[in-house]
Structures are given as C-alpha cells and as structure tokens.
Amino acid sequence: MSKGKRVLVVMPAYKAERTLKKTYDDLPLGAIDEVVLVDDASPDRTVELARELGIRVIEHPENRGYGANQKTCYDAALAAGGDVIVLLHPDYQYDPTMVMDLVAPILAGRADFTFGSRFKRSWRDPLQGGMPLYRWVGNRLTTFVENLMMRTKFAELHSGYKAYSRRFLQAMPYHDFSDQFVFDSQMVIIAALSRQFVIEEVAIPTRYAEDSSSVDVGNSLRYVASTISYLLQMLLRRRRIREQIGSRLAQLSSL
Image (tube, rainbow, N blue to C red; front, side):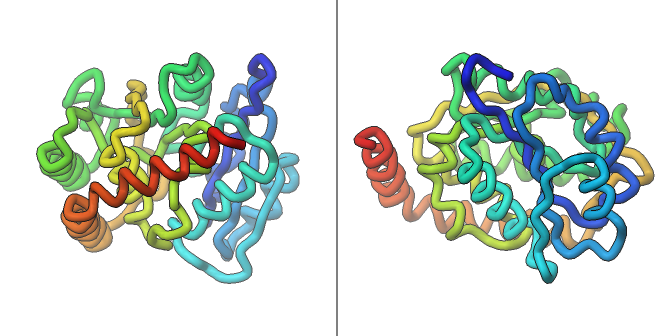
C-alpha cells in the first residue's frame, strides 16, 4: 500500500476471458488496495473467472459501450475511497507490472493525470512491439493534429493505460462524455484545454498479441473523426471549460 493513499485498479472488460488471468497475475498486488472489474455484458466467462480470481466485479446487464464502462469504473473507484485510480485493460495489451510507474508521479504530487506512452522513448518502439501499421499511422497523425490544435507536445494521446488522482476525477465532467470509444479522447482534451491539471507521460513498452483486443480499421477511422470533431467543438468553448473546471476545483478545495 502507498503511505496512506488508497490505490485502485479498474478494469473495463468485454470478452476478456483469455487474457484476464495473466493480466491480473502480473499486477503488483502488494502495492494495490483493490482491483475492480466492470463487465460490459460479456458473452464468455469473464465474470466467472474474475470472481474466481477474487476480483470485485460489477456487471452491466446489457452492453453499454467502452465509455459507459469507464464511467462505472470511476464511480465505483471514487465510492470505494480511491485516492489514485488506474485504468488497465484486461486484454494484456498494456504491461500490468508498470502500474506503480503511472501511480508514482501522482503520489509524489507531481501530476494529476498520467498515461502510458508507447512513443515516448522512440517512434519506432510501437512498430517493433507489433502495433499494426494502420494504427501506428493513425496514432501519429491524430496526435500531431491534436498537439497542433491544443498547443501541447505529447508523444502520444491515444493510450488506454492511465492513472488519475481523486481530485482530477472529481473535477472532470466525465458523465457528460460519450459512452463509446471517443470517451478517452474527451478526457484528455478537456484535461489539456482546462490548463489546470498537470499531465505526465510515462514511457511504456508496446505489445500486441493474437488474444489482445484491437479496434478494426472502420472503428479506428470513426474514432479519429470523432476525436477531431470533438476537439474543434471544445476549442470554440475552451473559456467555458476553464471556468467550469475552475469552479469544480474551488468547490473541492472548500470541502
């Protein structure tokens, strides 16, 4: 455990039966207070296996989408008293042993929001780790455009491996975000445009395996289009975003 700070790992799951156990087994469980899995109506044995492993499980009675799954994850983590909440997919695409690398900057008070960056060390690393070329190109182009529009310098803006402080999640209007894949982009865009949070990238390895989940080309293109469209809308409303986040942070400070 981490000096009185409660560290929770949340897993948004859908058809994770083949990879859940090895993901869980690689977690540094001695440093984590609780693992919560939210299952989005998987048709396989994801729920049964999670319970066998001793993971706390929350079930959606019907498939609600990736963003909706995350909303349930964060609601549960905050209700459980999490001080640092880590988002880890149970598909073994991200290295579970690096959870505390993402948590460390938050525990040190250096960051409010961290995410694993596969491009931080080198642009070649993701390709060498097996990232499909179409995803590599899409990631590079979208990250470049987003950096240009937001005036930021992130190496990657499309990682699914993230950690948040409690204060960050309480201030973010994440229930207003999409229930689909663009949820991830919305979280990053609002955080970056508010200019009131410290965001830090943590270098992580890239790995793709046959049993890891992957979004197909069509959905990837829709995700990119939705991300850019949302960013354009938010750029027009950034003053209001800063005021809203500032008001939320002031309310938290007064508690």
